[in-house]
Image 1 (cartoon, rainbow, N blue to C red):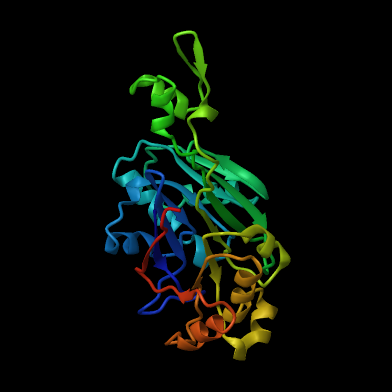
Image 2: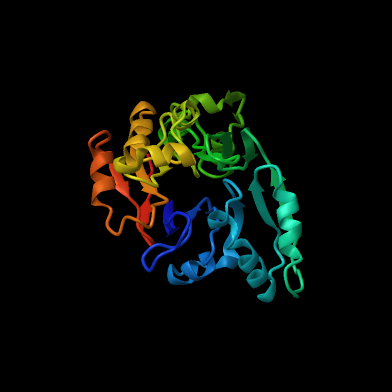
Length: 300
């Protein structure tokens, strides 16, 4: 599983930072978190095909998080995409997509499935679930949590001890189905280890510090949190519904996360050592993300 930071700037792009977008490569698919202007060009640089995107999760409707969607959709149609595309976001998303589909002249070749969400579990797949919660920004913003499902370890020696032969019966037990060996029933709990917790990745979108983020992020392996300002602009951060690096680090510490990745950096900071230092003073496993940074989310 990998996180590819396609854009790490805030409202205005620079030569070094594109508008916000992050690709989550895992579960056999590519998932986009926000889609700022220029995202598809950044994907080309990262050698990621837009045609392989299955889902897009939008945190809120500020331009730096959504203006890449029209170009992305039209490029997909131009290339003859037929698979549906799922887009998740706050209420108002359907109207936004209707307007996007009316921009310019192009033929739609695939279905866009729009999911307007607010909080709680919003998606359950075979290998993972996705939840969201409202945060504190100048407009409605949703944070997202991606939670991997992980099956208990199959203890082969136990299965053989009970007389189960390798083959289809192994698979049934791994899926939680009992099997018969002669007149004896072998149950999954006899051959499976303890329950295992999968990886948890949380993305804040734009937000001021809030208790919701602490609770929502608790125990995450990775917290991707906005860090628009450093401490010298603390008042500005609170006035505009954003966070400083220190604020983000305080959230990470309270939430007992394992790793903090800072993004959504204001253009006023040509170098980010100050932001990273302020975060590290609070939470020792902090890092400022750069465009094209690839972060591997290790298996537990």
